[in-house]
Image 1 (cartoon, helix red, strand yellow):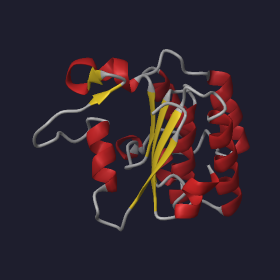
Image 2: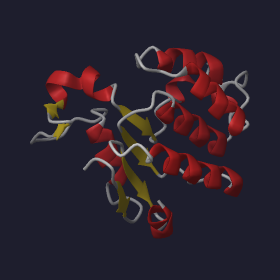
Image 3: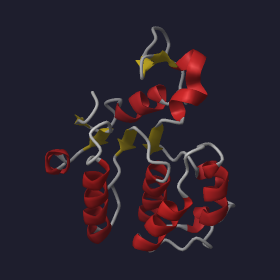
Image 4: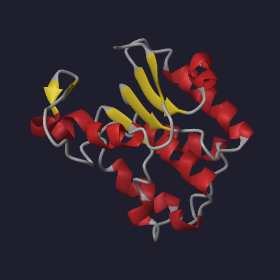
Length: 171
């Protein structure tokens, strides 16, 4: 539902990440179908994904040989509304070295890169799979602030998985 934050809370292995992979059509459902924005993912995948910011699931691990900047260049081509200035401000804010190879980034830095990429095109829907796991406390606070700013536009929605119920309540 537009303008809401929904938390998906569950134990390890309960299927949270699998649900996100299925929503992003990274994994194919065994049966059934679903719609996002009233459209079938099978027929309108590119159009739908342009409206989603996704962070989670080691999506960029295959590109570990690229620098963060090179990876951003690749990802930006997927989104016609990529905001380069906003991306650059987030990279600076989160103290991410754009010249560092993605594969050499710490787990926490990779999470921050995913988060920045998810926000940089100002999507209607954010799908966040454990966005603050392994992220330092200061960056976690900045992420919460950025998510609150994101939600100021009432047509936006966040669907996130977490082990921390308080994280969802704060939003």
